Structures are given as C-alpha cells and as structure tokens.
Amino acid sequence: MDVRSVIDVEQRLIQEVALILCKEPAAIKPDVSLPSLGLDSMGFVELLVVIEKAFGLRLIESGLTREDFETIHALAARISKEAPG
Amino acid sequence: MRVSLPYSKNRRYLTGIDWTIGALDAMTRRATGGSNTFQIVLEIKGPLEPARFQEVIAAFVRQFPVLGGRPSRDWTLAPYWKMPRPGSRVPVSVEFTQVEGQDSAALLEESANRCLPDRQSHVAFRVFHVNVSHHFIAVQFDHRLFDATGAETFLGLLHRWAIGEDCSAQIRQISLKEPAHLCDWMKKFEAGKLLVRLLRKFAESPLAVLPRPAALKGRRTRFSIMEFSAEETKAISMRASQEAGFLMFMPYTLAVSLEALAPAFARRGTGGGDYLVSVSVDLRPPEAAPACMFFNHVSFIFFQIPAAILPDRKALLKALRLQMYEQIQCGFPKALYESSMVMRILPLSVLSRLMLKPLRGEFASLGFTCVGKSGYAFDRFMGAELVNLIHMPLVPVPPGIGFFISQSGPKMNAVLSFVEGMLTDEEARRFQDDVRRLL
Image 1 (cartoon, rainbow over the protein chains, first blue to last red):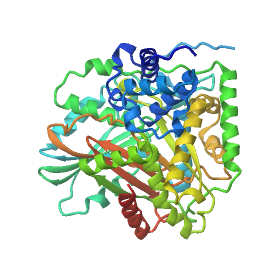
Image 2 (cartoon, rainbow over the protein chains, first blue to last red):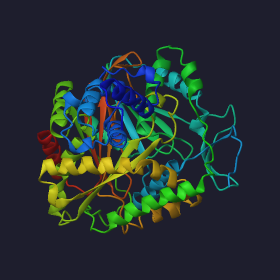
Image 3 (tube, chains in turn purple, cyan):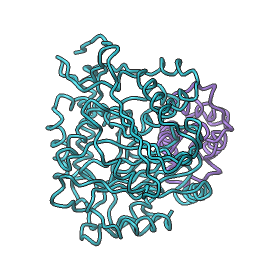
C-alpha cells in the first residue's frame, strides 16, 4: 500500500462514496458531512468495509466518533494517520 | 447459458424480492386472512375539498397504468406484472368520512386493517374529516407494487401534480423495465449457498418468538404509534451518535426496541433463545428513488442476538454493529437479492411454506424497518399544512410483530404493529413508555 497522503486517501474515498451513492465523483465534496451527501447507516458501513479492504483498517470496532467520521476530509486524515505502512 | 428476452411493453418482470414479498402476502392470507399491505397517513391542517381531491386522484392515477396490473407468468416461468391495455380503467377508490369527535387512532387502525376494495386494486385513498381544516388522508398500498420509499415518492409526486407543477419529466423517468434475470445461474446458486449457510447458523440456537394465538383467522393488526417532536428527534439522533457511533441510528433504535420488547418475551417464557430480527435494507441509491417508485427495491439483513446480552446496551450495540458489518462485507443483502431470483419458479403458496422450513415454521422474532431519508420532501400536501406522515404497516405472519421507524420532515415516528393477541394493551403501553425512556 503506497497511498498514504491525506489528499490521496481523500481522492480514493471520494471515488468510493460516489460508487456507493451512484453519483459522479465531482458531486462528492470532501468537506460536506456524510449524511448530507446521502449516506445512511448501511451506506456508511459499506464505506467502512471498503476502507478495510483498501487501507487495512477495521474501523467498525473503533469508537466511530463524529469528529473522525463526519466528513471525507476528517476520515482521510484519520486513515492517513493510522493505516499500516 | 444466457437467454436473452426482449423487453415487452405489457410486462414488467418481477425480481426475486418482488416474488418474496408476494410470498409474504400468501403467508399472511393463509394465517389471518389479511394481506401484505401498508398504510401511509398524511395528517393535514387546511382546506380539503372532496370533489377536487377526487378529480385530482382520478387524473393522477391515469398516468400510471401499472396500477391496474396483476401478476402473471411467462412461458420461461419468469413471473411478471402484466400491464393493462392502454386506455384501461385504473381501479383506485377514494372515500370520505366525517369523523368529528371520534377516536382518530382507532379509525386509522380500522382503515389499515381493511382489505383493498378488490383483487384488481393496488391503492386506495380514505379521507377522514375531523373538521373543515383538519383531515387524515389514509393511503393503503399493495406491498407487491410499492415499498415504503416508493410509496412516499408516489405521494410526493401526487402533491406536485395537485399543485399544478409540470411532472411530465419525472413521470417519463419512471422505469418499468426489468430484465427476466434468466442468466448467470452459477452466480445465483453461489449466492444461494451463502444464504443457506447463514440460515443454518441461525437454526443452531432456539429462536425467541412471541406465541401467536391459536385461532388467527380474522385477527386484525394492532398499532402503537409514537410521535417524536423535532427537538426530541434531534436529541435521539445525538444520543445514537454518542452511544452507538456516528451514523449508527438504525442499530441504536433496533437495540432500544429489543430492550423494550424483551420483558414481553420473558413473561411468556420464550425470551431465553436468540432474537432473530429481519431488517429491510433499501438497495436504491437516494437519487434513484423517483425512477424506481414502483415495485420493491429492498433486501434484508438479519441480526441474531442472544438474550443474555440484551441487558448490556454496550455489548448489544457492538453485536449489532459487527453483524451488520460482517453481512455487508460478505455481500449478504445482494446475495439474498440474487439468490431469490431462482425461487421465482415456485408458486407463491409453495414458496411461502418453504421460506419457513429452515427455522422450523418461524421467520424471525421481529421485523424491523428504519426508513432513511423520506421520499416525501414537502411540508405541505395539496395546499394544506402537512402535520405528520405516519407509516402503518401490516406485518406478515409470521412473525406477526414489527417495529417501523420513519421520518416526517424533522420529526421521527416509531410504530409497533402486532397481530391482535400477541401483546396485551398494557404490554403495548409499557413498550411505548420504555421506548420513550430508553431512546
């Protein structure tokens, strides 16, 4: 895994959220909250599954705090900090 | 082998989920004589003129010949929805009743339990006038043709039509095409294996179920409706986020409903097994709802919760989160959707019996639905103020008991529905109190 900068992680997350919501990636803004983008419990868990596959992080067992997960940008920052080398 | 079939204008092939919903209808008809319908109630404040309302409904439903269709079967054995000939009458009834001074909850419950006027009808409107500026519009939907989000979207389109908006683009966008799904058989059988594995796992432990009365025929469904204000809803959402995790509203409300129902199971000595909860999952992306208004676009996930962890909220939430994660990770909702295509070969009466085999005559302890973003995005209905929009679903038997959460603007509604006799009035009241306290 060589994708680790916040921007790279953010780009990957934008692609994945767009896929889950069947939207164009351009419509996914990293600073807009995930619920405002249209994600619900199921869509959010789908995203967590993708994160485990892509970055090796099993976040479902973490605290899932609003601060870390509210936006794609916040999520990318956490992933880039924690994802294994 | 891939069999390509041309789409036909007079048919819409039914998916395996549509056929499963049909089997739940057959199951319920056999058990209680009722059917798999649900009612959405719009409570409005403002004027409602019966003649104009009737006129609007008649003109609106003429746009959707699909409402006059019926299920049929192809020479390939694929079931389909047969569209009526162009120009055929669309059977939709509209009734008006003055109910001033009467108990509106009882009237709405009676309405939800009524059968659609005839086998050809799939939607019925009943208007209850409390006074000149307060009305309940109860719309009964055939579940074979609408799911919850589809029905909300239908009502949203009706509102726009009634206030004179040009809806032609959205009506043209509605998709009534579905392939026959007579290909990729290996993929369907592989998906079936995943389903069977999971069902076997569920069957290993005894299932906690509420006993149903011996004589079920003619029994109605009872409803216990809980309305939450915008402030209460906001506070619940905050607590869900803090306790269950960000965007974990569904697991949080499910945990609360299980905690609140557990005493009723325990009193009947059936609370020692595992609680198995079927949860419907919308497979439509939010933007696709207007185009996918008709038929069922859902699948299911199942939660198996040992009774022993119910008193421990933290452990319960963790179990719910992990099971949801694992089922999405292994692709269970899509596998169920895919594998159910194979079952379409079975007549509904056979499928409805077969569905109960793996769990020895049961289906689940409880049905649970949490509708996400509402398909009805307006605070008015046909010129009047929309006070509330409430779902009153009849729960298929078995399990005969379900909990349903939906949004009406910034407000949340929670509805417990159960076959008469499964809970006492006192238990239903206590459940309401407990849900309010625990949420």
